[in-house]
Image (tube, rainbow, N blue to C red):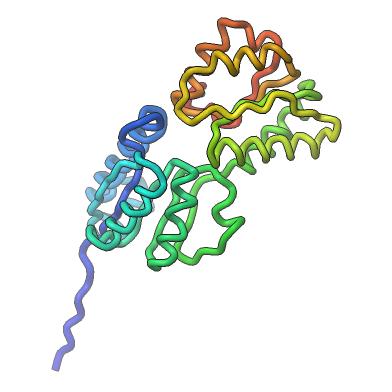
Length: 257
């Protein structure tokens, strides 16, 4: 007799991005809009070649988008829900470094495909080995080594450094990578103020006072999103950057080219 073969006609993607909270305006909502646009373009088959065939390998893309807000523990549960209840074939997402570090082992344990699109912590693959988890963006170690090399190539005086970074995985890892890279370039380079305000703080008057009290050659920061915007708006009128060269490792959203 004839053997009938069944083929999937649809691929279901879970997309996770910040739709609310501190990271929504600068990263989350634009990423979500890009995902909607691309899914629509791919399903219509109107993307530039070689992506001009309808869908994904001929399969129509169905997307489920969820909010990344709420913290790492909540995101692990949301990830499990996407795989088990929504029956997604793969999840694409995550902006927060703490979220990426939490969901990666969960996806691996479930043997489900996870593609990390943005989070910058360098510790995901450096501290673990995964078969089902992938990342598509650079991470903080690359960014900070490049920044240190740029500072040296531009002959920026950087014997003393003041540091201000968010108190979670991204800020802590960025600070460590930058200071380590700078001291490789200049073993005499010395960190002075080392400030770790809470993520989402938005108020930096006391930190700006501390930075101004002991000016350094450079002020380094990996602040991003609303936190970076608030810091720049509060520090500039107080003349902080007239005394120190500001160097930023994650300012692409604040200073668009």
